[in-house]
Length: 226
Image (cartoon, rainbow, N blue to C red; front, side, top):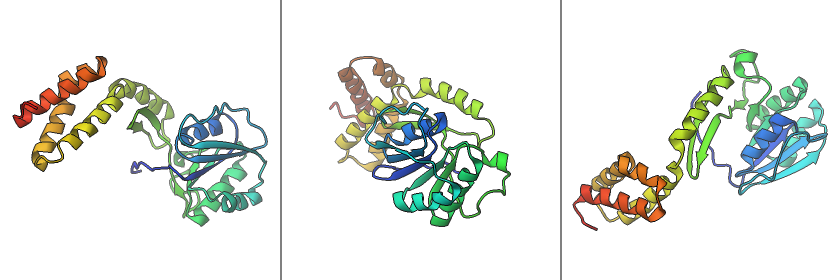
């Protein structure tokens, strides 16, 4: 598997299943996408999405023969098979593959199914364990072999990523300020900022101090007192 990041802003995600797994998937994608969840009832905890996307819960119990029609109606970028009915999940995977729609199958990994099993044309995706801080996203996956390990590594990453979102925002501002500098000098200055222990320590101080510290590092690189 090759990791990729997909921008779901303005896209639709269709989730089959309203239990705990379907709710978790729906909450994640509702940060950006327009999420539609199909289920006869919704025992999972859905919340309100908590992001720029939206979340719509539709009471329906599609049989395997109904799945294709729902895909045609919603036209999702991604279909999530998260029901407790293997036949329905099979139909989601098959219909998504026929339409060139990404599919995430939550009930069984490729390891469980066998590397060669499943629908040949299905564009299968794995939703990794993810840590997020503002615009910074770090994810880890084990190819479905060890979900518990993914969760443990995600916890370890939380300490690494903490504060990185603020640094990303400041770095973007500094890059804009350096836009008239030579490319080599700009790259060296930005690398020095993100590699500076003093800058990372300044993340725990008031916002102005972070920027002052970062600009001091840039001055050391460029020789410009600012």
